[in-house]
Image 1 (cartoon, each protein chain N blue to C red):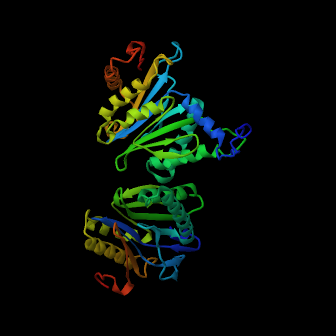
Image 2 (cartoon, helix red, strand yellow):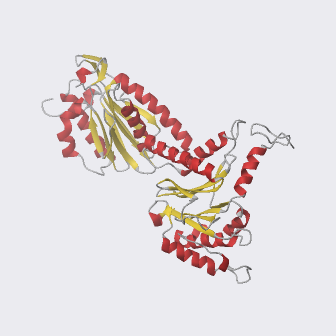
Length: 256
Length: 212
């Protein structure tokens, strides 16, 4: 299997492009991010691992604003993710400049996915090592949620997870009846899922970054207000089954 | 004004009016050179840029045709990428970008009107330098100066289709009656969710007013 994985411009004999698969591995090394779409909006939750007590609270953002009505949560190589957020912002801005209205999320997601895909074609560059989840709310089209991965494809979802605990998170997400929930109810569930999938043993402290966009914010994507976030984290900690070893005492759950 | 336009110009009367459930876009059909010679009695100034979106053109005919051709292509491509019919606002924005970015070379103004699922019937004016304005109805071209009074007095929001047709026909007839560079036949297009209907009224069948 050597030599088929040296560049993105080479297929392996069994039809795989190893560089793209390795890029996806980079995403799996990163901490978890989830996005869930409900009746009247979209909520993002990111488990931000705190590697040093010297970090400034609230810095090292993992959720970005791409346009007024669009948010983006990322996992993987953060430098790659940040430069792609600029690409997404330019796409949204050019669309508005040319066509006079908000960019539809499906189209934005496809454009960014096309850009990511271009980097999987050549040996001179490496694929982007990050996945992202886009969410938006528009009065006519309602809430939308799309995910783009390093291979350059985008799919629409009701709920999705990326990062190290994505399997566990997906299982939790599938238990929810998100189509009947409102954003306010969903915020608490998203916080709970992040707390559940956080691995107390391997990773110590984490900071929960929560954002939403929906009818509750009048179509504007923004970080969840502090009081609602505090309430959601309280609900998350209280929902822990008491048989879980290690308990929430170790979870410093530093919040902005 | 128009005599400064080199070559064939559409000294013209154009208008677009929203009514309950749709929009009517209309124009005369005369093209002139220098205001002295009628180069065509029957040109089409209502260009279809998409299934439910029309544009009417004023100013230099060459410039207007070039711009609408480019806009038609861009809007069609945009609509296919979006996998849905384009918004009227998007079509008007495309025209506006073309007019604004090339304002030094161009001398053409447009009225864009149409129907889309999001906002229903709409009318947008794209002026010479690239201004974009949304209005319930609008009139344009050299002939429009003679009917501002009539339009302001007689327009009502939420008219029925018949009332609106009568309003548009009267307005065009009055303008064509006074403006020497507007004339020929009256072209009207009725755009609704269901479809597009062309009405052509020959010059002798237009409504007559006093002294005619």
